[in-house]
Length: 154
Image 1 (spheres, rainbow, N blue to C red):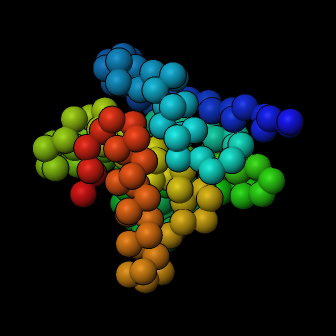
Image 2 (tube, rainbow, N blue to C red):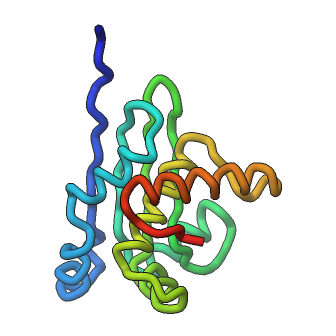
């Protein structure tokens, strides 16, 4: 029996994050955790890079690629879906921290949810194309978060 190749997950840090920001986030965003979150959401093999950025880089990327002039929590740059899911996920640390506080979630829970969310986007799932698609994606997120031992993100 052929076993699928192991997925490759890389964690990158923007050099524009302060050493204090990186140190604090490294306690939450360990390579093993991030890999577990990505591989839980992948339906097959993949090569995913998760990049953590500051507000300026997040805003620039959102403006250049989505035409929206503000930093957002997660951007997914999907390159291929078959036979291998290849994508970059860009998470904006200040936005994620602000949202976690506002939603009364731990930073770990919110990062896990956004990594799962971005990984689903990389595989073609959408929530902005209609209510049915949004319901499918959100239901899958709830199921995947539960499988990780984490609460419903909604």
